[in-house]
Length: 287
Image (cartoon, rainbow, N blue to C red; front, side, top):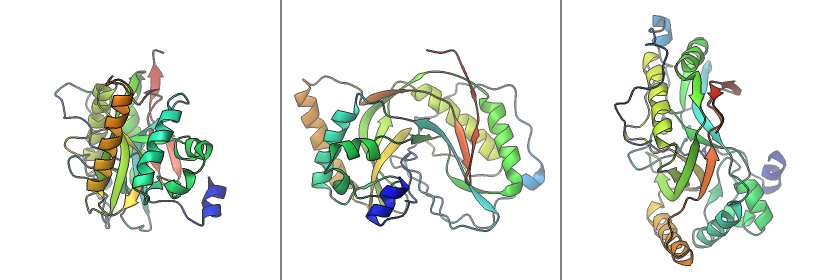
């Protein structure tokens, strides 16, 4: 990926493919837990002095964009589910992306930050660069924390999410999201059915840990998703019309049969703080 970035003369993007879509409406079901969590020491509740813009998203919008400035002693915290797209659906997804990009040429690949219309010139590169990397379903906002909060946050996340059963995640629909300050638009794939209840409970558990550390909670009505591409500015109207037109064309070509774009097995939860990644849960019961 570094060689690819260098060849195109671009650096890494500050946007994230895991568009942080708001998950499904909150339910009253209790999240998996081993008892209520005790509050952390009072010193851990002091948030960093400069939070900046946290890349929050309004209802129906999303994507993890870390737009707060770097402050010495602060570390970016992100809790997420890693996602890889299986090889089988990539061919169809590649054709979808090529069509959308031909009508919206300003799209870039999330994380790699390379113009999508350049990569679309070669189907192999499109599959490997745009679709062959790790994606993320965000379970909490990307926020800055202080170094003295790290151990407490990780320990409580592990306590709250230590045992998780395997389940399937259905990525059902191409969707468009815009960040709160309308500086970026995202082409994403949303989770609407399979895996939604489980992800919702996991978000609730992360919210509890965030709340105990005085960190901003996730969106009120979160919508789990991964983000595949982004463009500068609010071009949601154009992008939505193009995506809707292409969705309808694909539906007609497929005989109007409702189907998933792809399905992925839940593989665990990770927490990235700065440049270090922590494994949060142990998986139970193979499926």
